[in-house]
Image (tube, rainbow, N blue to C red; front, side, top):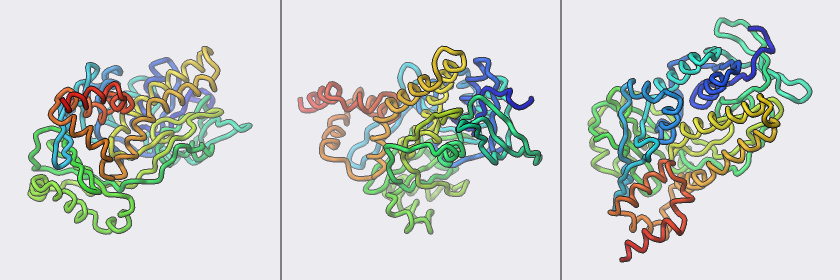
Length: 403
């Protein structure tokens, strides 16, 4: 294909980029998708596919592929606070369950779906420069996996290339609502670890950790400590991690009897929103909006961005709307949807003890199964924290507990 023939070039082929490219191609647009990686490959990321992410895969006709890969469903989340445990269902009528896929499986599945939709996928492609003309992004210069240097041009270049997005850096995309890193989080995989298929989350003093079933009979264990301890603990992650798990003695004993099958991975994550569009460019996924992975919303947020951004670009390309107007609505919808969970995530990532009013709410929820389900659904992103903590919702729960 010659230069100037692309409608969109997407940088980054994981959970934001591949769905964006796929959805645009399904609308009939000419899309080039590039990534430095080759697939299947792993990446440092969240792994929980929350119910709204599963609902997106279902809408795209891809959920059956994930199920066929042997990824076990998760029907129950259990939040162990020590004195009490709140357990419930994370889903709703759109998607009843969650999943915890290996990224080697999920990302490759998304890349393949993009290719099947007509996207030109180029793996092992290194983007060397973002091209501008008259203050507008018009394309990229890069090198294929065979070393051939090429120039590709497009109406829009989409950055789906994560926190260090080349597109965001090239345009100086402004950050706002920014918070410094709050948590130092790590994870790995264990075999031979008995667990009943739930997503078990443990909240302890200055520590938070969880266990979930993933592919091949493995268990993902993720956990962390305040960012203030990052420098001290980074020199012996394994010891610090296992000492953390011992705060739940039964879990700690089971983990020490199991076998770790991979290195520890992780890194502190900044919390921010970026302006997600400008002349000739857009941002999706972590390139445009990022928060600590403690609430495991990254994959679902990336899917949401892909759907909303593809619809906005279609409106602009088809002449239904002016580009700036369509993308301003994309930004507004993203921010309004994300902000309540963003604030909750930053609160949880501080690993500070729940304030007294939250302790009262937790006590009122405990043992009330409908309320426990809604608490779990709020943490899973199925319902908004703004809805859950509204007086209209919390009031009856508190009144029922007092009665």
